[in-house]
Length: 236
Image 1 (cartoon, helix red, strand yellow):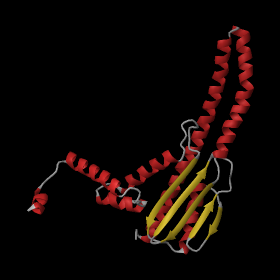
Image 2 (cartoon, rainbow, N blue to C red; image 1 turned 120 degrees about the vertical axis):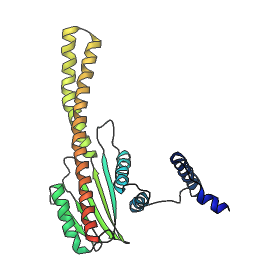
Image 3 (cartoon, rainbow, N blue to C red; image 1 turned 90 degrees about the vertical axis):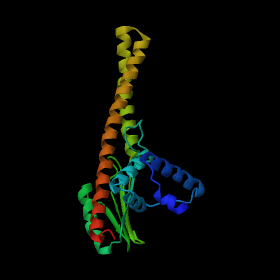
Image 4 (spheres, rainbow, N blue to C red; image 1 turned 60 degrees about the vertical axis):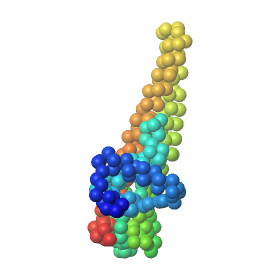
């Protein structure tokens, strides 16, 4: 009788959302710290719930961006870390086409280290905005693409160079000229701070532009590699 009542009952959209939200909370309390899902599992669950898997990837990308030190003060991330898991394994013979995809997208040959079930492509270029590393591994029925790009050295050079060079050189001169013209300590300090702020804004703009461009490039690399793997494996 109770089973029949459950089958016959219908819930409105707001009730469904509330039920699933509460069920999720109860699940967390029951299995605190025991649940861990891969990106593939999340995409599969989303597809079953009628959610486009690409939206799951976009949400993961946003979460990664928040965790990768996007740095409001610097205008861009100190580090970019991306990961994509594709169902199916690829043979070692497939590595070379994937390496070619990376080289084409990154615009440089890079250095490659190949193992039996994985390869690593790395950029020896440590200038702007810093070294990048791409690892593709295929095992346990899936292929994982990991990307890491570090921008700390570039940030130090950009902010240290401009702040120490431009701001350090022009600030004392600006303060002196303002004092001669206005004989006002307040205006002199304000003028000096204005120079510092302008140089900082310039450094922040350059750093943000360069690192966001690198991040967009790396996201494109991940998508191209994932598409190539999916084409090869057929999503198995």
